[in-house]
Image (cartoon, rainbow, N blue to C red; front, side, top):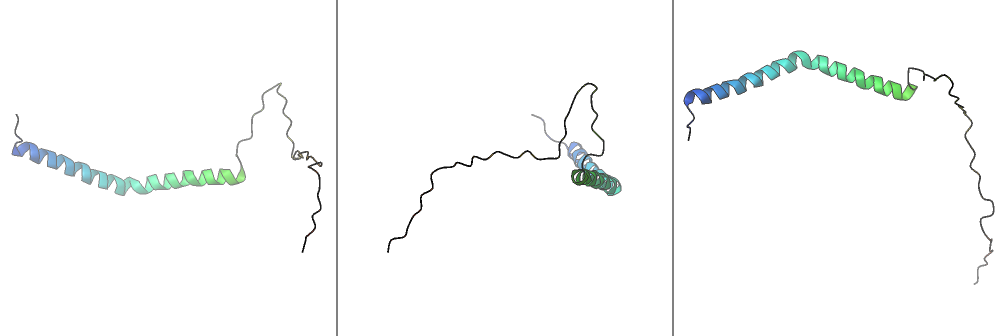
Length: 90
């Protein structure tokens, strides 16, 4: 069984502190840039949702597509059933 020496414990603590402070410095320098890029990308997605796609659809040669703005009217069944007139009894 191995025992932990003082040097190995000190080395482990120093590595943990180095990683912790390195991460803090990295976030301090590059955090605003990452956040700005992320917010810009989300803004573009929202803009694209409201305005529609920016690039027009490419049509393949020889393929026929019919685009219509007129909504198709659904046919309703006028004869639903027999109508019964009720009278109130006092």
